[in-house]
Amino acid sequence: DAGVTQSPTHLIKTRGQHVTLRCSPISGHKSVSWYQQVLGQGPQFIFQYYEKEERGRGNFPDRFSARQFPNYSSELNVNALLLGDSALYLCASSLEVLAKNIQYFGAGTRLSVL
Amino acid sequence: AQTVTQSQPEMSVQEAETVTLSCTYDTSESDYYLFWYKQPPSRQMILVIRQEAYKQQNATENRFSVNFQKAAKSFSLKISDSQLGDAAMYFCAYRVLFGGSNYKLTFGKGTLLTVNP
Image (cartoon, rainbow over all chains, first blue to last red; front, side):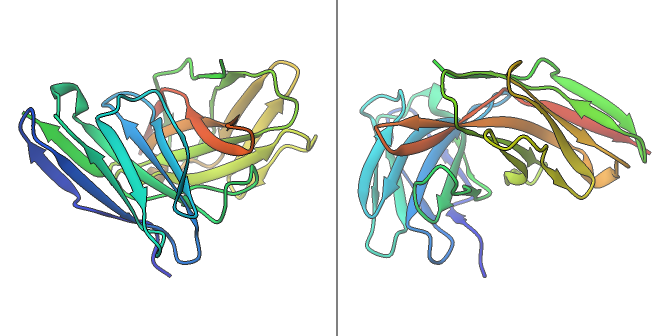
């Protein structure tokens, strides 16, 4: 079975632009979470979706938004890009949102904002 | 606020030897999960081992084991018989309850492990 897949793998944008990152969860997984990993730091939680509904968001501005589709894939959108948005964006999927459910990560999308 | 602290930014070990990576965390919960993830240069976060707080027994996965000290809020990872493929960034993570019944991961800053041949 395929793992969590993310596209694109690498993206270069300029300040002020908009970006859309995509994630396909492991087959059968209904929950998707997004994390931002700045160079030299651990991942920071951005969003969690379950059954197409937002279950929570981290401390990120409204320029960040996301959605989950009926097939459980997800998009992360970032508007009005800033230099500080340059990071590795990780998607993780899990069966559900229970404490015991393991989150499996994709290889991430490396976003560079110039 | 829940925090995870990894006090060793970098560690090195000789191939075939044993190394221990440290992690401490802060929480007011009594039942929770702790994880060690490995992130090689390929960037994909790979789950190494998981510990459930209500279990007294330390988790073990082949060459990887943990020393879980609940009272001290300590969760260290021991890698035995280190291999070149173990070289990676290792992150300690804590499963945090939010929004009533949802969970997210809170990560430490990571420890970069180098394995010397």
